[in-house]
Amino acid sequence: MRYRLSQIKLNPENVGDEKALRKSLNKALANALKVSGRKLPEISNIEIIKESIDARKKPAVKLIYTVDFDCEQELPIDKAVPRKYDLEANVRRLGADLDTLSKEGSRPVVAGFGPCGMFAGLILAQAGLRPIVIERGKPVDERIKDVEEFWAKAALGSGSDAVPDPESNVQFGEGGAGTFSDGKLTTGIKDVRIRKVMEEFVAAGADKSILYKHRPHLGTDKLRDIVKNIRLEIEKLGGEVDFSTRLDEIHTVNSDGNLKLKEIVTSDGRVIETDHLILATGHSARDTFKMLLDSGVIMEPKPFSIGVRIEHPQSMINRVQYGDEKIAEYVGAADYKLNHKCQSGRGVYTFCMCPGGYVINASTEPGTMVTNGMSNSGRDSEFANSALLVDVKTTDFDDPLDPLSGIEFQRRYEKLAFNNRAKTTYGKFKADPKDPVRQSLPGFAYESMIEAMPYLGKKLKGFDSDDSIMTGVETRSSSPVRIPRGESMESNIRGLYPAGEGPGHAGGIMSAAVDGIKAAEAVIREKCQSI
Image (cartoon, rainbow, N blue to C red):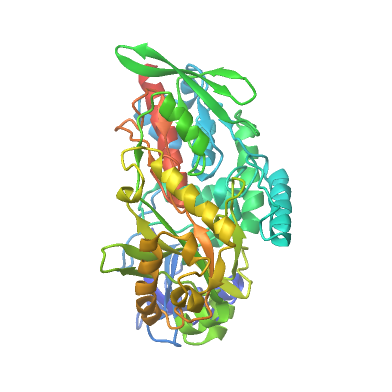
C-alpha cells in the first residue's frame, strides 16, 4: 500500500546534502510511525513529494516535507494518490492509438522553441506526429557566443556601439528567453501537466530535486544543456528542429465561410503545407505579430507592466528572510515576493526575482535598452535582483484600440533608457526629477514606485534603502498583445493555435510549457477526430 505523510519538520543543518536529507527523513518517519507497544512497520520506496520552508519564527527556520512510501501493514494515515500524465491513455480516450495517429495527415508545425514550443514539439513527437519546429534564432551554443559578444561590447561602450543580433539574442534562439534567466519553475497554476514538465526536465539532465524543492529553479548554466537535450529527444522521435528559420507568412483558404490554414512560408523561402501551426513565438516577436495582424489574425492589445531591475546584497536578503544569513548555506539563497497597491489603483510588485543573480542586457533592437535578470544554478553571485514593475493599462497606449500600440509603448521607453544610460540608485531616483532612470519611465510608473517603496521596505527591511541599485527599463515581463482563442485553442483561423507567453496565454517557464502541452493536445484531439 502506498501512503503519504505530511508536515515532517527538519532543521536546515540536517539536510545539507541528499544523503543527510534521506537519513533525517528516515529517522523522522520512524518517529512519526512509532506506536507504543508495537513493532515499527517496515517501509520502503520513500519518495519526497514536496519541500517548503517555514521562516515565520526567525532564525528558527524549519524545512517541511511531504513524502510517499510503501508499507504492507495497514496504517492510520492518508493513502497516496499520485497523479500522472499519460499521453498514450489520453489518445486512447479519444478513440485512437499512437500508431494510427502517426500516419494521419500533414506534419504539424511549431513556430518558436522557447518553453511553450519546446514542450508542444516534444508532446507531438511522443505522439508520433514528427513535428516540424522552426526557430528564428540559433542553436544554444552559437547563441551563447552571440549574446556574450554583445554583452562585452555593450559594457565597453555603455551600449553606444553595441548592436544586438536581431535574430540571436537574449530573447530569440534555442530555449527562448528562459535560457538566460533564473530558470524559475514556480507557477500559480495547478495542473497535472506540471509534473510532466518537471519529469522531462529531469530526463534532460536537471537535478531530481526539482520534483519536490521549495521554489525549484534550473539556472541558466544548467538550462543550456537541458534545452539542447530536449531538442535531441524530439529529433530522435522523428521530429525536425530548424534554426535560423523565421515564420514570415501564413496562407489561408476559405472553408465553409471560415479561414483555414493552408501553408506557411519561412524566412529561407521554404513553403510548408500544414493544417496545424502552434504559434509559440514568445513576447518579443514584434514583426511576427504585425505579419499575423496583416494576415487577418484577430488580436487585441493587452495590459502588461513596466519598471526596472533593482539590486541588493544577497547577504542582506538572507539575513532579513532567515534571521541568520548562515542558514542560506543549507537551504540556498533567500528570495522574496512583494507587492503594493497604490492610491491610483495601480499595482507595484516584484517579479522574476533572481537570488544570487545578475542584471543583464536583453535588447533585441538597435538603440534600445531592455533589462532582465538571470542566475546560475548555484545562485552564488553576491547580489540579488528582481524586476520592480508597475501596471500598464491599455488606456496608457497612444491608441488603446490598436493591437500593436503596446509594442510602440514599450519601444518608446526602451529607446529613452538607451539614450539616458538608465542606471542609478534609489536615493537619486526619488530625489532628482532629472535622474536617468526616472526620465526613462512614464510619469505614472516612477510616481507609483516612489509611493510604493516605503511599504515594500516595511515588508522586507532594507528593500527601500537609498543605495539600492536600479537599472532601466524592464518592459518584457509579459506580452502587450493577446491573440484570442476558442475552446479548441484555435484562433479565428482554423489550424492556428496561439500558445504561451507571446499570444498572451502564459507567463513564465512552467505556465508556458504547460500551455504548449495543451496546444499539442488540441492538435492531437483534432487529428483523432479526423481519423
